[in-house]
Image 1 (tube, rainbow, N blue to C red):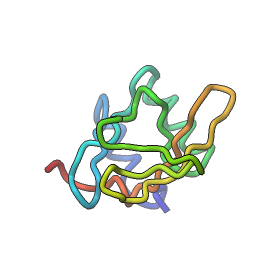
Image 2 (image 1 turned 120 degrees about the horizontal axis):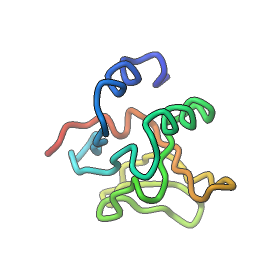
Image 3 (image 1 turned 45 degrees about the vertical axis):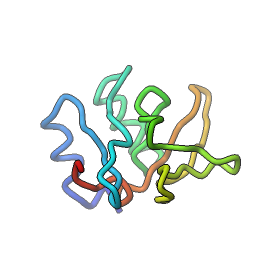
Length: 102
């Protein structure tokens, strides 16, 4: 779904993007951090979801449950942690992080 939106077109115009909780407006993710924008896009496209790494997560407002589900501290379902050979990889539903800053 996210690939059919204007996300990639708009994302290419900025150095880094902030992603906010669609319910509360809290800052959840910032990307890219610790990698290039092209690396972020390539990884996200290969997995089918925007994919964030540990350093791109705002842990003040994001939790990862024992079953791998990622949620905001207020309970918004965000996606899942699907670790790979490079570490934790948080595959996030773009609709869950399409909010505006509070």
